[in-house]
Each structure stands twice: as structure tokens, then as C-alpha cells.
Length: 119
Image (cartoon, rainbow, N blue to C red; front, side):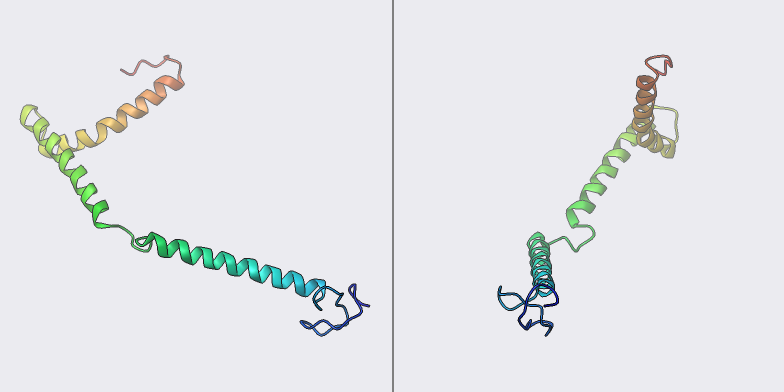
């Protein structure tokens, strides 16, 4: 009796199997881990096949959304260019950078409890 039983294990051919199914504890643990791994692999393959577009980097809708966003930025920049004294490139940069600048200015203002008056 090596590992808890007196019968021949069908999986590893040692005299360590107990009365439960003719397998030793090591073989039962291995089989259990193999079943868990198989279920996980099946689940992963099912979820990737259900999503459909998970393998593509960008869809057409993503690219069109990006282009529409840049179209809006260029339109606003063109209006600023026509009404102001900036060049067209400066006005596009102004439209792009101004919200980012205001966000960080607000974060600094809140973090300093109003000590830095940035507005």
C-alpha cells in the first residue's frame, strides 16, 4: 500500500488505488484538472466565436467615428480661423488642445483647494 490503497491503479499502474473507481489519488487529481482545463478551453472558444468581430483590430464603424470626430474638429477650427487672427493649423491645434488644457487646469485648481487661480 503505497499511496492509500491496495489495488492496481489503471492510470499509473502502481499498487496505490483505493476502492473508488480503481484510480489512485494522483490520477484522480490529474483527471480532474484535465476536465477543468477542457471546460475552460471550450468556454473560451465559445465566447470568441460568439463575439464575431473580436479578431479584427478596428471595425468600419470605429474608423468612421474617428473620421467624423476629426471632421467636427476641422469644422470648428475653420470657423475659428475665419473669425480670428490665427492660421488654419493654429486654429485646429487650438480646438484640439483647449479642452485638454482646461481639464488639467481644473484638476490643478481642485487639487490646490483654489490657491492657484487659473481661470
